[in-house]
Length: 445
Image (cartoon, rainbow, N blue to C red):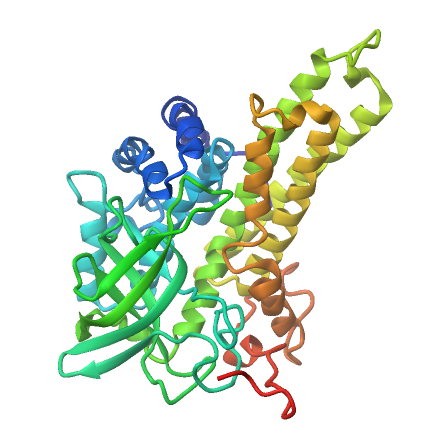
């Protein structure tokens, strides 16, 4: 059969072992870590679980076996990710970001860079190796990176600059929201990939590149962000002040094409964010179903026996199955097309995260006011579900624009995804919906 949703024995083993890790190792630390008010301390409470994930091959499962990684296909990654996300999507995000930070080195790095950065990540005897991914910048007018591809000149879009000085690039500017970059101690991840403007004379999609910034680089400082959700993954502000980074840390294939790196990365992470939403909704659904099977609301029978509850939970169950299948299809497309899926990745991320947010809330309506009691888990599930449409290239900020850009192309084939055909993504497609200011309303200086 060309289409078969039966898992192989190896996939069932992967699913089972990851589920056991999430249940037995991760779950016991989640409540305390989520309740910790200090964001760095909250992250540190997951360190033992992360080390065990590293030693189990989870932390760098997405890297090729050639460099010591797990060599998982994208479909396999999605199967494993759902089990972790059902317990805590924030912890899963930490692992996801390891991939966002290093897959571009695999795609576009030199052989020396692949050996240096990928091998270091997979051969750490402490099991603590962490990789950051730094694109987003502080919101402002101008500034922020939702419209990083607007054609206007600097300072619109990405503003962190990298100026070549001899055999080093000198970095200046700020990033806001990057994940993992501060490391376990707030002093830096082992390595972080940073999208910078290597040609400050150009704006929008021009002049962007990616460079690896290693822990201990002078002139780099971090401040953790306290968030309402995803509290078990660390987001931070980074300030670069004349930070000198070796020129050979520039990922050569990204020179002038850092914008395409961003879009390819968020295509890869689209089904991961989608399956995170599935995992969160799955937990909410199973909890609501357990509640409905025993709670009578003062009536003669458990509420599962009444139409409204049965119908609502039936709809939720169907949406979970639908979104899971969409994530599997998207991951399969990425496997088939060299990790390119800019259109389907965005579609998957949008639809799954928004449908699953509604599913979580529907489960809360079934449970009623008791879902607000913190002794139950719905309060955290709702916070986590609220994060998913907003992060990882927000659904309104970047994801829908990516879809629009492809659809507006005169070369777009509306049956391409149905026929499993490659869908190209170009710089032209990036800049749709980004318009310069009207002359009578200039940007503030």
